[in-house]
Length: 262
Length: 349
Image (cartoon, rainbow over all chains, first blue to last red; front, top):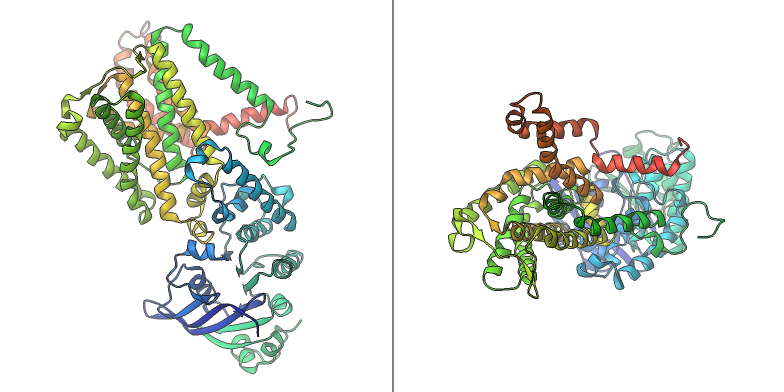
């Protein structure tokens, strides 16, 4: 068992008495792809929000590289190396693709306010060095035809890719993906799955994936965590999860595993 | 340029990141700036004073556009922030500090006041923030009127003509160059800021503050930066207005000023630097245009000038509404379309 990048320990989250998460625990080993699945309302997005800092759990702890991050505001967690994408596209619609990705570099840019007024020396140099990193991501995600396009005018599938690119620009150690394949056709889904695998292999980025497309989840995950009504129902490799009778009964509500296998 | 090029090609990121990347743009801008340098010698002082008012309005409008158009934090207190700059500049000049330093200090005081009144922006959004900044406007107006020892109360504050090394800017011609200089560097500084991480962070806060936060932007810090920078330049604009008029009274910086600056950025184009410039020109020239029209019409209708000037506010409102309906993206958008047309001429697409 290698190093753990994220340890979620007995996290409980309630909204006005309604429990969204009940004592949820799971780990993400460094360099692995872990998927979080479960029916609608199971608490998957709430879990991501707890990790990225949008929600603060009532109890429990979340440790990133061994350090408790619950007291940190979202922007500091981003600086530690946690990036995420959103279920509904959350891009900066008035900026170009390039600028959206450059916003992702924000915490890597060191120059100060004063030199920005002159756009000279350090500011100019840093902008250009980081532009180079962003161009690598643009190449990787095949976004070059859209580089200078305003994001709001782009098709859905491309916007999803831009959002992935923006998260990548942060150079995260842990990438949280909230339904990256939602609303995509088969071809786009396969492209996205390939990108996720490549990100994991090339940059050794650990990934927490929330996704409804079971084919993809079972294909690319190293480990699967099943949530149901805010509780962890099962944890295991895709094969174990597919065979788990509890999961089949509770989550799928049908006896054959047609849905799980592909 | 080589003959085999058709269009703009960049060989480095630096080239591409320029504010004016194309040689045509640079030539046009150069010609325009040259024109502005020469034009005062041709015009009489009435037209010069219009130019001077436009220069001041440009700084004010660009700075309001930074906070409202670019960072998305609506401000109804911009006129008062200009007033803070004006009074602070006047106060420091009357203490015997030279003009340049007094203006800078005035900007800094305005910036601090802007930051203080920007504090609610962390919690308040949209219409609620508008009300909070409106409160700032009213509080500051009250302070202008009643803090007699500093502001002179309702008597106002008289100033000397600004001087740099015993060179007095004491007429419209000399003021023209001074104001032109400040309008140019302020616009340039904010344009530069827009292509840095600060500008991108401001737009990201406007467009989707939730994802701005998870991408590593400290919302509170950057909103206050936006308020601070915007109020700094507002303070500079106010200070310049003060030394230009050589007299400050509280009425100059009332709510009407905040509203007319908002009108400038709406008519010019929210979030566009060039739009603020167009808006400033438009709103400053509008009353002049109305008086010219009424003069010509008075040959046929002798009483019309009294009516038309009385209707000034109404016409102002009407134009604003017409812009919101027919050109919601402002003059900057129209400018963009005109440029595109000439770029493609004689082809339609």
